[in-house]
Length: 218
Image (cartoon, rainbow, N blue to C red; front, top):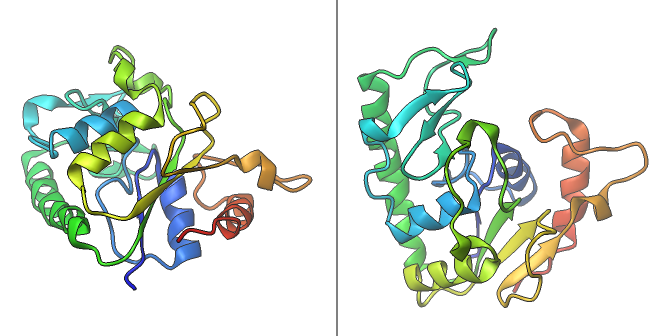
């Protein structure tokens, strides 16, 4: 049976920990973006239309990231960065076109989930994810609870057997079918803490190993 584990964001930390625990090697669309749920749902509803159109891209926060103004997400790792300053170096046409090609390939992998023969576990960390670099983009009330995300995935993949593992989303309704809920606080040992921006933080792996071990899906 072809079981798959696929990230739905909202940031890089959960993708890194998901890959470690489940042994995921294949990249997917939402792996390395910072994606509030509004942008996640809009991207799926629009079938990623015009994802890297030049007029929708803008460097924000003194070059700290590149925002997609249409979808309300951050392309935090899609453009060349200066390691010393952790700033985007430039956003030129060559890099933009390279992203167009790269994500066209990942989009085909995303579409292929419709024909997956086994269950899929979508993993999502956080929900509204207030992000200062995306200030000014109004949240969609349709996205207030996981039912909207489930409805969007059902339309995209009507035959797919899937569940969503939703982590650290205390603000949403926890009674949605197809959604499993976990809170990292319940899996954090004495003296440990989650460090979301630091992908090398060892406590993160300990916490997520316990959390993922508690999930019995299909």
